Each structure stands twice: as structure tokens, then as C-alpha cells.
Amino acid sequence: MPFLQGFFSPNFYLKSPHFLLYQYEILDVIQIFVFFAFFHEFNYHGNRKKMTQSTSIKKLIPHLLTAKRIVVLTGAGISAESGIPTFRGQEGLWKQYRAEELATPYGFISNPRLVWEWYDWRRQLIASKKPNPAHKTLAEWENFFPSFHVITQNIDGLHHMAGSHRILELHGNIWKMRCLDEGIVIENRETPLPELPPHCPHCHGLLRPHVVWFGESLDGTVLSEAFQLCQECEVIISVGTSGVVQPAASLPVAATQNGALLVEINFEPTPLTSLAQFSFLGKAGEILPQIHQALLEAHRKRTLPSKKSSAKKSSPQKK
Ligand code: BJW
Image 1: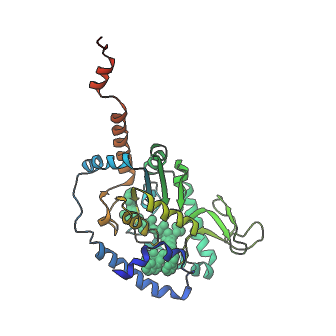
Image 2 (image 1 turned 90 degrees about the vertical axis):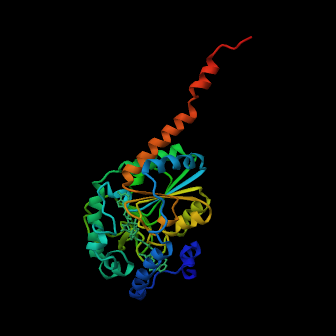
Image 3 (image 1 turned 180 degrees about the vertical axis):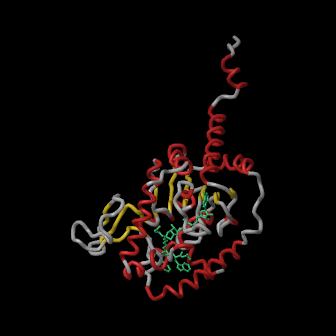
């Protein structure tokens, strides 16, 4: 599908102009087409290897232990077990709310108060949530692997709260606001917000959530760094993302094009599944800790001398 190739190129996103508001309807139709095209192209029902989960984990461990650079791409599914709703699927936010009204620059300009009411509600919800075992495992892996980075599409800040430091936030952060007049970004953790919509404490301009909405370009520096990490890593693990939102969904593709092994952890198959050498169907909060246990076990076996060799070493040497 040559016309899709452009979407996998970082330049497509880095150089694209800001979204033109009146294009939105046309883009919706294209979105649906591209979504189905992805599924057909990757034929995800086709050739997925059926291995039991524990066999797969055993087979995965050597790859993780020998990898010099590991990247994890996370999506809303990793925070689902913390009680934060995902976007798509039966219980997803987009089933109840209109993305066009709440997550586009056009929606914000049309009704800033409505958008802020939605974000205020989500801020209150997120403020009451804690990282789950999946976030915590990734935070531990920062100390376990020589080079380990999390690239997240989530804006909830739970990776930070779990203790991760090397994080790229592709879609911004719900605890930050940006002044429409001056462009300055401020951190604000107040819930509920006393004024809707909020105004800049410096110039009194209108503040907006510092997140990336549909049709907006991602931060160029963050995106370049994300592509760079993906092009250099040996293993990329995609966790809890539907893999349909660009350019984030192109990151694992870019990694595999450069020879990386793709591991996917998700409830269900996605357009990325057929590219994955390892696909774990299940909860991130269960599978990641299982992989962690297997890693610790393998690491222990590697570092502890075997009984035979330790017996040899401790036996007195013959003259
Ligand atoms: C579990 C689990 C458990 C559940 N364990 N798993 C036509 C063609 C191609 C591209 C476009 C197009 N029209 C428009 C575009 C571009 C558009 C796009 O990609 N749209 C697609 C929908 C087609 N992208 C953009 O506009 C981006 N900008 C851009 O591309 O700029 C250049 C450009 C502009 C215009 C035209 C062309 C180029 C910006 C995207 C911004 C996305 N923003 C949001 C909102 C952020 C702020 C906020 O949160 O309020 O980001 S939308 C939403 O989707 C959010 C997420 O980060 C993002 C991805 O969702 P995610 O994380 O994958 O969540 P879900 O819900 O989709 O999936 C959860 C998964 O978890 C599921 O698979 C579950 O099974 C699984 N799961 N529990 C493991 N316990």
C-alpha cells in the first residue's frame, strides 16, 4: 500500500502544517478507510503464533536480557487497571463523548467551557487513581536494563507517579495548561478548578489543556526523539494501545523496519499484532509482572554460579 508509506515517515508528522479546521469531516471518512485498510494490510487474523503465555515468556526472556536498548510504547490500556477509562471499545470515552467537540482545536474555540468541564472531570478522576503493577514494573525496568525508555500516549502522569524518569509524553499532560496568548506552559494540579475556563495567572489570557488534540502536530522535539529511540532499539514493547492513532502507531512500525523485535501486550489483536513476534493477549498489570518475575529468575540463574562450578571452586586444590 504505497499511499500508506507516508504515514510511517517521521517527516510526514514533523513537517505537516497545523490542522485546517474545515477538513475535519473529510478526514473522518479517510480515518475509517485507513483503519480498515490497516487491518486488511496486516491480516492480523492470519499467522499469529499460538504459544502458551508462559512458553512465550520463557522464549522472550533471552531477547530482553541481551538487548542493549529497550523501548516501551504505552497507551490508555496500561492505565485501565488503575480505573482510568480508555478511548475506544465498548466502555471507551469516545462511545459517550464526541471527540470532535472535546478533543479538537475547533471544539475548544467553539466552546472552551464545555471542553474544560470535560477535562476538569477527567482531572478529578485521574487525581484519585494510582499506578498499577504494569506502571510499577516499567519503573523498575529503568534500573534493570542498560537503556530503557517509556514513550507514552497517556496524559495521566501515572508513569511519573510510579517512579519512571525516562518518559516521553507524546500527547502532553493533563496537569499542564498552556496560555493561548503567550504560549507559556504552567503546571496546575488543582481539582476541581475554581474557574472554568481558567485564565493565565500572568496575562489573563485563555488557558487550554497542554495536550495534543486531533489535527494538531505533536511537539517536534519529543516526536523526533521518540522516532530516534525506536529506530535504535532492539526490542519495542507495545502495551495497551489500539495502535490506530498516528503518528504514535507508526513508532513500532519504524522500530521493526530497523530490525527491532516487537512485543505486544493487549486484551485484543490490533493492527500491530501481525508485526509482533510476541503477542500476549491479556491484562498489562498481570503480564508485565509475570515477565518481570521470569527476568529476575533468569538473571539469578545467570549470576549465581551453578552447583557444579561452585563445588569445584570450593574444593581444595590438589598439589
Ligand atoms: C488493555 C487493557 C489492559 C484495555 N491491558 N490492554 C486519516 C488518516 C491518517 C491519519 C489521520 C487521518 N485523519 C486524521 C489523522 C491524524 C490523527 C489520527 O491518527 N487519527 C486516527 C484516529 C486515524 N492524528 C492526529 O491528528 C495527531 N496529529 C497529527 O497527526 O498531526 C499531523 C496531521 C494532522 C492532520 C492530518 C494529518 C496529519 C494527533 C493525535 C492526538 C490524539 N489525541 C488523543 C487525546 C489526547 C488528549 C486527552 O487524552 O484528552 O490521544 S485521542 C486518544 O487516542 C488519546 C490517546 O493517547 C490516543 C491513542 O489511544 P490509545 O492509547 O491507543 O487508547 P485506546 O482506547 O484506543 O486503546 C486502548 C487499548 O488498550 C485497546 O486496544 C484495549 O484492548 C487495550 N486494553 N485494557 C492491556 N488492562
